[in-house]
Amino acid sequence: MHFLITAGGTREYLDPVRFLSNASSGKMGYALARAALRMGHEVTLITAPTYLRPPKRARLIPVVSAADMFREVRNHLKTCDCLIMAAAVADYTPVKVSQTKIKKSRRIMAIRLTSTTDILAWAGRQKRHPFLVGFALEDKHLLARAQEKRINKNLDLIVANTTAALQADDSIVWIQGADGNWDLMRASKEAIARSIIRRVTQSVRSL
Ligand code: CTP
Image 1 (tube, rainbow, N blue to C red):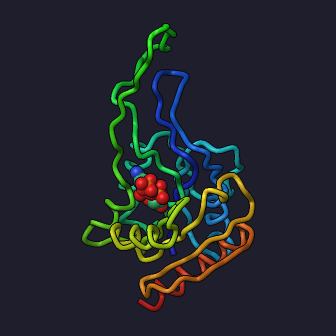
Image 2 (cartoon, rainbow, N blue to C red):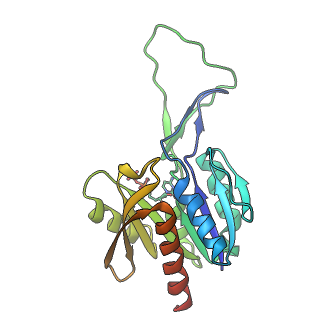
Image 3 (cartoon, protein in one colour):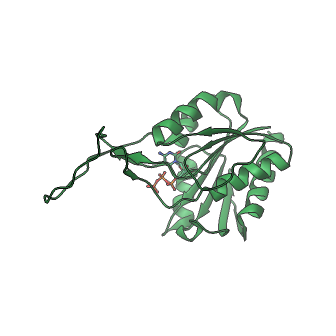
């Protein structure tokens, strides 16, 4: 199978040196890429900036912003069997990007933001799309909101986790497929990644 996996937190630049981003480490996406490669699959890894060493055998596509990530997912969606959106994609981006460093002033400063494209929701709207896996990061009503995301974005699988997963090596996740049943898993991100890849391959083969 060919897996298209996104990882890391996108950066939305305000000027040449400053950006808005989030605390995603990219560990889950990279662990998924490694797990898929070890199981003999082909992997294209679209990655926002991280401090991690990329898996050697993955086809690596470095990106910076949510718009870059959207463009690359769009370019590769038709050639993959499964898209896993493990990236923390910025929901908003500055309306204006200054070409020169913004100078400080004593006045209150406001930054106008506009929403980015929801990449997964876009993929879910395509007539023919690969098996779609999304992540839901919630601090309240975790399972209800994650299920809502699976249904609204037309996903085949959703992995729900809490903000405790950010930066950590271990995680507690709940995984829900199209049957609506939840499976709880408390393990390292490596073990969770292996289990997700196994589940995807079984589901795709039984289609
Ligand atoms: N996602 C995406 N494009 C975006 C934002 C999110 O593809 N612009 C994907 C993420 O990669 C993740 C899933 O959507 O797999 C859910 O992301 P999450 O941040 O939990 O939720 P949002 O849909 O952005 O909604 P909210 O931030 O309001 O919870």
